Image (tube, rainbow, N blue to C red; front, side):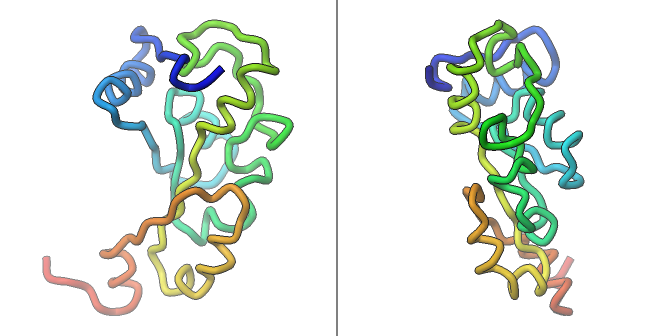
Length: 148
């Protein structure tokens, strides 16, 4: 089973939002306000294909160790059952868990000098898929805010 064969339902607001993005070829990613299981699970269960956040917050062993939203055996995310990704249908866990884990991205955003100093460590965390630079926040942290 692959994520291309799994469609989102159009019946709930988070799933409708994710569905629209998939239709236009955009993957729905959500920035979580905190690296906690309840935020991560909520956005992934609602249809997001990945989540991101500040690097110092997310680069501390979260990805690939259960805090990144992975389903067992990789992580500890609970089995939500019928998800928007699955058209709210039930599938055998042995088929769907690997597909969901493969399709879920972890994105870190470097926004502080401390994050840049730890870049090698953060990017070396297993499961981190993409890094972004938060230019405005980083410049402000460096004492170099740009013009408004």
